[in-house]
Image (cartoon, rainbow, N blue to C red; front, side, top):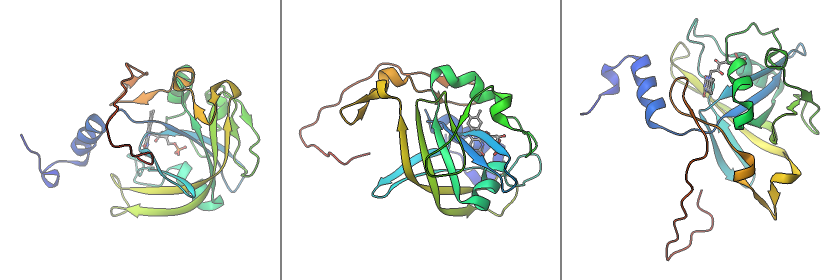
Length: 209
Ligand SMILES: Cc1cc2nc3c(=O)[nH]c(=O)nc-3n(C[C@H](O)[C@H](O)[C@H](O)COP(=O)(O)O)c2cc1C
């Protein structure tokens, strides 16, 4: 079978993409508005870009209800700062609770009963319950699409501070078994770490992603 995306609705394309691009890590993004309101929301269109400088990206889509920008994007464009908090198995339910369309003034830290703790460099707080958090400064926002429902923006940010729980840090590496990351599949389905396989090949590429 083949599917021409031009002949599918955006919802159909969305289902094909979220079902095919799996599993996805989840950026739990904390921001602060220009009025000082705290915001927290998950984004699984999320990836690392490079390490010099340490750079990541995630993609807030337009709100499906009215095509407007999501609060996270509005706050980042206003302040130039955000924090990416890692989502673990234990944080799953709280993370999902923050994903409803709340008003900009609603503090999702309170909704999810999570604890905001001060960052070192940026204004948005970190999630205390998240064992790895990355303070970021905005590098660039790249708009994609025509600006309405179905479109989105790519947010690129530089990591200016890592916070890592001591028990996860093992001679420069993160102990993934202790981290217990949660991945997004499609809809309400998530995945935890399954079987880990080691693929040793003759030619080593130490800088591969
Ligand atoms: C696990 C998970 C991943 C999500 N990933 C994305 C995403 O990559 N892009 C997006 O626009 N919305 C995503 N959402 C939906 C947003 O979290 C949701 O629209 C949220 O209300 C946005 O909040 P905000 O308006 O405060 O920014 C995701 C939701 C969940 C539960």
